[in-house]
Image 1: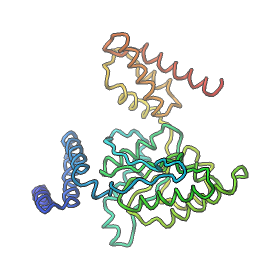
Image 2: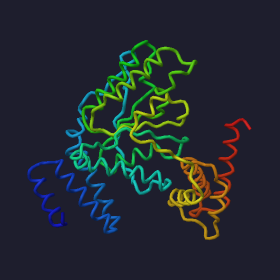
Image 3: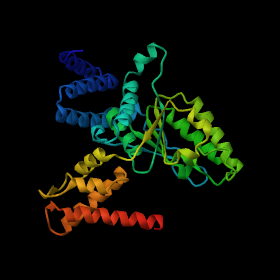
Length: 332
């Protein structure tokens, strides 16, 4: 579709109040701007479309008026509906990991085309990796890119002290997410997906895992389900077969660590003689979340010292302080 045809489609869908057609045409227009390398224009248009769809169309499309399911025992909400504005391009991951995420997005966008071949887009994704490596941020970025809110599952509320109530809570969650299109995040998934052969677990947990597997198998909604875990080694073997894709998040290599420092230190000017490569070297083994914490601490040191530039001393002190914290955490 040419640019003039896209603009015409935008006007026609607006006049007919067809918000789905309007959003689809707007997305195609934004993609065209991206291909032209008009990055800033594309970002501004994405932001405007995200805000417009939230105000004018999202509540109808995503059925946000559906009551949030609650735990019958304590009345806690079992999930949260969250909206994000994250730039997918700021995700600093290995090329393999980012390519997997991009394929998931493309399949979702081309769901209609795939269905003509009797194929379905990947909608059950397992994210594995150490804490702070970007699993949750990836889900938030995909939510922003697709203009679809995140349903964040609260496992602390789902696990009930009453026998049988946990499975009932899970049923409420699946009933909710099957109504509408969502980006669903089951965080700390290992809580509910533990190995049923673990002799430390009692019968109730085993029944819960069985129930969860059945609900996952029977899920027919239009959402994308993400399950994130830091402990994939304790997941039940049957869990793995239920997912269309498994994405592994590694700790950042040297190139990625440099990109992370560059990104997180942007708010503050740096002294000309600052040795960023030294910081990259010393930060080996740190996650993106760790590096963000170091960068924030380094900038705060400069700011509270009434300086508008970052020094080597600020960065080195922040790294040493973080490493000491890690030693304390490990009991060394």
